[in-house]
Image 1 (cartoon, rainbow, N blue to C red):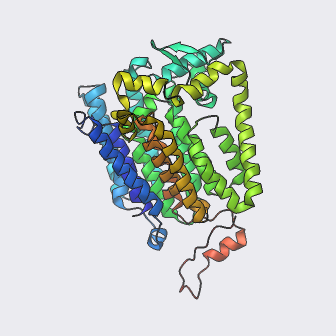
Image 2 (cartoon, rainbow, N blue to C red):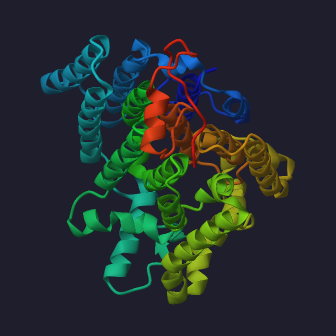
Image 3 (spheres, one colour):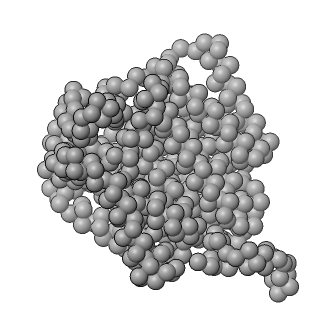
Length: 469
C-alpha cells in the first residue's frame, strides 16, 4: 500500500469517528463501534510500518484526479454540517456561496489545476466556512471548554495573576495546557479578534511544513499530493470543528515543524524546534526517541545526546518561569490532571463512562479494571516502533511513516481519549507523503547535480541514493 493511500485511510477513519453525525452514524454508539474503529486504526498503524514508496511513486508527475476531488467532497460534507446543525435554512446568498465554492473546487480538480491553486481555494473556502461557524457558535463552555479556558488564562496573565490556577467553567478546572499553547492565542486576544483565527494561522503553518518537506524532496509529486491532502483536511468537518473548539492545531503545527526539520536533516533547527515543542505539547515526547535516533545515525551517540540535552534545556528554560510562579498549580494542571488515573480519568469514567464512547482500546481496560496496564502498553508500543526504526537504519526519510505508526499505537491505549488527539499521526503521515521516501538531505550541490544527471548504466533513468547527513 502507498503512503498516499494510508494517509487517506487514516484521514477518513478519523473524520468519520470524529463526526459521526455528519455521516449519519450518530446513533451507532457503544464500545463495539469504538473497538472496531480502533482495530482498523491498529491495522493502519501496522501498515505504516510496512509501506515503502515504489519507484513508480517517485517518477509519476501528477497526483491522481481522485486526490484532487477530495477537497470538494469535504466541502460538501462541511456545508451539510453547517446547514443541518449550525445555520439551518437555505437562502439565495447561501446557495450561491456554497454552490459556487463547491463548483470551483470541482472544476479545479477536473481541470488539473496546480496543487498550490487548489490549496489556496481550499483556504479561502475553509476560512469562510469557519467564519460562518464563528458567527453562530460563541466561545463558551457549553460549546467546548478549551478556548474559554484559554481566554480566562490570558485574562489572568494580563491582570498580573498566575494563569495556572483553578477556573470556573462553571465546573472547576485547572489550566491544563503548557504555556506556549495558550500564549499562542495572546495576539488575537489583545487585538480583540476571535481566538479561533489563531487556529487558522496554525493550519497554514502546517501547510508550510508540508511544503518545506516537499520542496526538499526529488519527488515533486509527493509535495503536490500532500498539499491536496491538506486542502481536503482543512475543509473536512472534524478539522473545522477542532479549529472552532480546541487548541489542538497549535500542537499539530509544532509537531509538524519538528518532524519536518528532522526529516530533512536540519539538525540545529530541529533541536530548537524539539525544545520549543516540548513547551507546547506533551505529545512531542512520543516522537522524540525517533528524532534522537536520526541524530544518532548522523552524529553518533555523543552528538545525539548533546542535541537531546540542548532541547531539554531549552524546554526547561521556557517552562521554568511558570513553574517557579506556582509549582503546585502548574504541575497540577499540566501533569497530574490527565496523568494521575485517580484524578480526571477516573472521575470521567465513573460519571459518564466516556472512554468507552471514544475510539480506542482503553475503554475495554477501564471496563475490565485493568486501566493500570495502559501506560506500560503505551511505553512498550513506542519502544517497539523505535527499535524497528533503529534496526532499519533510522533514515530521516523514513521518519514520517514510523512516527505515524508510533503515535497511533500510543494513542489507541491512552487512558484519556478525545478524537482530535489522534491527528498528530495524520500530520506525520502527510509529511511521509510530502517526502515520498526519497528526501535528499542537504547534500552538496555537486552530489545533487550528479544524482540528477542521466546514467548510462541506468538507461537515462533518475537514480536515487540514501541521504548524505
